[in-house]
Image: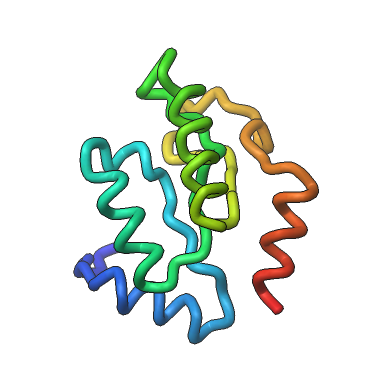
Length: 115
């Protein structure tokens, strides 16, 4: 709980994920706001393989669906895997577990990338 939080470069984080056998996925790209496309390009250039397209984006209200579609298109256009999930960052979150999952095809794509 009282560990100092220090930032690291995207390159180091992606490298650490890969060294553990994982798939580097950019989470919550909508929260990058005006920098999203620039960060996504850098992420791809550094070896990132996926993007979280399916998540609640509750704070974006009616724009949430458009954001999910936008990141799905970016993923498709850049051959990125799609990930998703329900976020539980708060005790009073009313979302049901699994509401923002991915299709079986998208899940299988993630599994293929692990090989």
